[in-house]
Length: 444
Image (tube, rainbow, N blue to C red; front, side, top):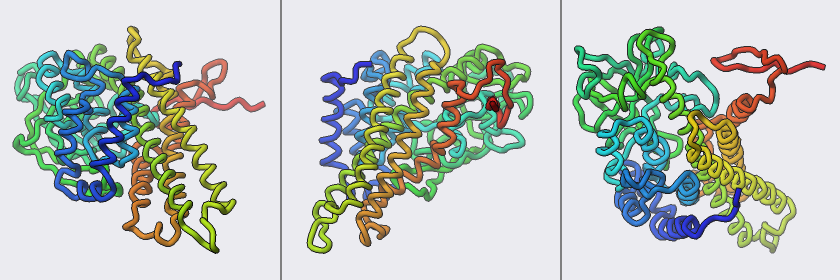
C-alpha cells in the first residue's frame, strides 16, 4: 500500500474543504436541516457542478468522474468534518453503485448520468434497523430475509399478468421506515419480497418520485444532519432493477429463485458493504477530527484559576487519548478505502474477504473515535457544552446516530472476526446463531 495521496486526491480534499468552510458553517448547517429536503439544494448542485461529487465513483462512460473508493472516502471525510447535510451517503455511497452494478443497459443509461450531474438523488429503501445486515457489516443472512415482505412485514411485490417483469407489471405494497433521505430522493431503490415469505425471493425495485400510491414522510431523527423518511407504498408501480430473472434478486431456496440472480445480488451487496463501510468510516473520522480540533481550540482560550484549562494535566491526557483514537481510525479508514479499491479493480468474481474485514474494522474503530471525540467535546466545553444549542451537540448526535444506523461496534467487530475465521476449530465445526456460523472456542 502506498500511503501517499496523489496530487488529484489532495486536490479533491483541498477544494472540497475550502468550499465547505465557506458555505457550510454551523449556522448554515442548522438552516439547511430545517428546509423540507433537509439539505441545501443549491450547495448540492454546486458540489455536483464543480467537483462532480455525486458521480465521483461512477464510471466516466456513465457520466461520472471515474474515481474509486479512495477518492469517495476522502470526499466523505471532508463532508463529515463539516457535518454536511446532503444526499451524498444515500445517493453516491449506497444507491448509485447498485444501479451501476445491477441495472440493465437502458436503466444505467437513463439514471446514472442524471445522478452524476446532481439532478437526481436516490435512496436505498431497506429497513433502517437492518442496514448493517443488508450491507453485510454485522452479519445476517444473504437470503434477503431482512426485507420482510411476508409475516415479518416490510414490502411485498406482486406481478400483474404475465408481462415477464417489464416496467409497469409490478406493484409494491408495504412500508419502510428510517430510509436515509427517503422523504426527498427522486429515485427509490426498494427491497421487496416476491412469491411469499417461505418460497420467495427479494428483489430491488426502482420507484420514481411522484408515482400514484407513494406517500413519504420525513421523520424526526436524533441527527438532523442525516435526515430520514418513512415510505408507504399502496399499489405503487415499480420496475425491477436489472432483470428479475438475471441479476436483481436474492432467492431463499424457493422455486423460481435462479442461481444467477442470487449470486449477482449477493456479490453486489457484499461489494457495496465493503466500499460503503470505508466511506462511512472516513466520514466518521472527519467528524471526530473536527470535534477534537474545536475542543483543543476552546481549552486553549478558556481560563480557570488564572490559566487556560488546556494546561491542566487531566485535560491534556483526555485529549491525547482522543487524538490517538482519531489517528488510529484515520489510518484504518484509509487502508480500508485502499483495500476496497484494490478489490473493485480485481477481475475475479465474489467479495474480497480481506477488504470486507478491513472495512468492517475500520468502521468500528471510526465510530468509537467519533463517539469519544464528541463526548470529550461536550464535557470539556464545560457548562456551555451541556446546553442543547451548542455546536458540540451536533457532533454528539451524529456519533450516537451513526452507531445506531451502522453498528453497533461490537457486532461490526464480531462479524469481522467471523469472516476472518478467528474462532474456527481445525475441523471447521461451529454453531449457527442468528443466521450465521459462530465458531466454538477450543477449551484447553
